[in-house]
Length: 393
Ligand code: ATP
Ligand code: MG
Image (cartoon, rainbow, N blue to C red):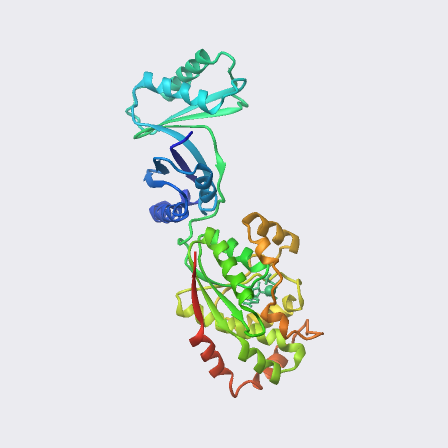
């Protein structure tokens, strides 16, 4: 094993002043959660402005790095050698050994950058740079110093312990989940909504999800696909509850009572109403959808306005200005694409009209919804009461 520990660098959360510890603690919690599925025992600790992950004994390095790459709030993952013994001669020895182990090809240029967090340490940073550089050159004459554009920037940090590192693996950025409240994701089996959930979670928002299915018109496999997607999003966003709402009766009732070209809009208005009720009950203060302007008839500006009208909660639509290909690119990057394209029926597509309205008039829509007055409140109530909750992690 090359490395027994990692230094975790975080970007934006460093700017949060007094709240910083909250962000650090949330980040540590997410790191522990992410490493929970990796072979090995890990300890996650913090020391002013630094988070460390230390493996106790053998562990799966590649899996650990992959897991850390999914933790929002991490800017860089630096595999490091951490030593307790701060003796200067020992430090030189360790630095030389580090360069030897990590860079078997000695034909490289390097620069040493030392920092003293421990100001009591008897040697200045500049002196450490020079002495370590000298020790490396003495051990490996093929190596050369380049202070402007070195192949290797070797960092030596003198803190409670000494950290030696030169590798930096980019993390996903963003903020630790749990630092920005909770929102309810409308998760369908498509490409867009998992991406939308990922993007909002990336900003530190905890998410739960709601899926509307219409058995027997939609199958168990379509539902399973959404559960699979929720689990894939949970790899980044942390565990989430997926509320599965039976939407069949409501859809059939709308189909029976309302003009067919308005079906999609009215259906979507009921989805939003129900999602909002579930959100309120579960402490979520926003809704998230995968809508993108103009993608389909129900996503023209007029349709979005009609759908939005029933929500009092803010609706976050992080892919609103993305082209389809841009959304696909993110879904491939985060690993949801392959699951999203599995061909299962979607509850919205079963009752779609040949020529849905693209510019719904709000008064007309409200008027059509009056035809539902007799039973719709009870149906919504039943849908809420019978929703199944599936824990996805
Ligand atoms: P997606 O790829 O996310 O399914 P889409 O392009 O198919 O999006 P629509 O079917 O119009 O678009 O849905 C728009 C948004 O409404 C979705 O991104 C999702 O947030 C929500 N939505 C649609 N269908 C459902 C459903 N059955 N359950 C929960 N949310 C849904
Ligand atoms: Mg869809």
